[in-house]
Image (cartoon, rainbow, N blue to C red; front, side):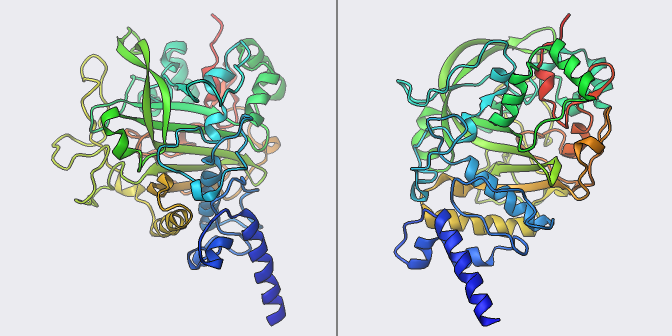
Length: 457
């Protein structure tokens, strides 16, 4: 038994040292092994997260539990936020953990090098990835909620029929936006990995005619395994605060439009684009695997976004909460009535409080990140929750019309205060099981991304 345990320890040490890039004076730290890592509960036979660029394999390590999926989420977060390489969607393998999240590093992460939804669903060929442009990588961003342009392309009755609920609540289709306590709008983007984007481009699913024909032929649009979708929320970093805030946020440069007003459909009217610095405040990661064909739904936030109801920390200056405000929390602004610069008072509802188990894991991971790079901005992010199917259903056994089966998705209290600000009582699958196209309601594999396709008149 002693020999077996020693062999297991050696194998574990070798595995960890291959993934680690830490540069510490102590041998254990240099090899990536520490007491904090040893204490991380990721379930039996599951390696703990490390600061590295390797995207983890499927989630369950032979079995499923919340602790296993919590660790799986952090592994995805750490790898996808590694510095991108010159090739779209791949990490820079020359980067080291000691530089992970260095303040003032505005270079894109792996997921930022994925194609945006706008690129994927454009009829023209997407532009080549240009990491080394003259002024550095600058993205374009133009959404003030996750579904800014849907209300203009699809009538509300059709949306209600597709989603099986109140569109205004589910989709924030009134044009609701989120304004931080500095009076700046939050901006959103949607991206997908090459497995998913190549599938869509190869089958020309950016055309409504092709999309509907493909869905009819295949009784739905079933995304390939290892598809990943990313939704990100960004706050504007005022230039006079850049030097101080760059130490606490992942910051990227982006061309952002002015909002000149709203049209008759409550869609924003955009004006001139100018370069701004954006700080990451929220990140959804959803990933389809053989063991999670209903996707694993992972959501992260900046630690100072907003307090949980009844748990305000007076020492924290929250980005979306003012302790002196008398406004009712989580109230959606109304176009034509509310000012774009009026801060929205936000709290996390008590039912969605981060569990003690996840709080403990978050602390351990943040300590691990700090051990690699004491200045890393990634130490200021936290896992909020992970949703996963306890009884996964493979595509071929699922419904051929929406709603899809949910695979025993668990837990049922998951929301990101920057992206589900006004619908925190709902959970991911409440809406996403209804994702579909056409009058026949052919399912689109829990993804609303295909609502981006312009419908033929």
